[in-house]
Image (cartoon, rainbow, N blue to C red):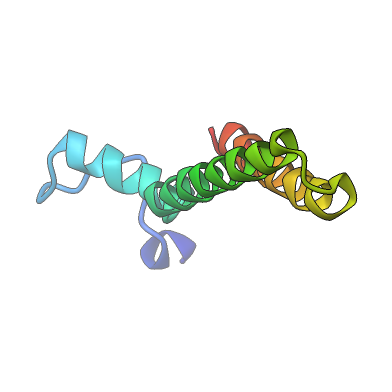
Amino acid sequence: MPDKIMPDLKKTPKSLSPEKYAQLRAELKSPYRGLRRFVYVSFAASGAIGALIFLAQLTSGQEIYRVFPNFALQVGIVALMIWLLQRDR
């Protein structure tokens, strides 16, 4: 009875090409992978730009206790996004 409800997924349907079927199965295993990667790269780029700005403020001689926490946060965001991108692979 379960075979009638769940067809064998190892067989390629006749209406799809094998390449398209493989692409759909990969999307089924990890949905929205492209969107997740775009978000990771976008946030990492934003964090890198922020880190450069706060690094410039640090080197210009502003108070370290006001600028360093923001700089550390930006570096942490970049590190987190790189880690998530590596884990997604």
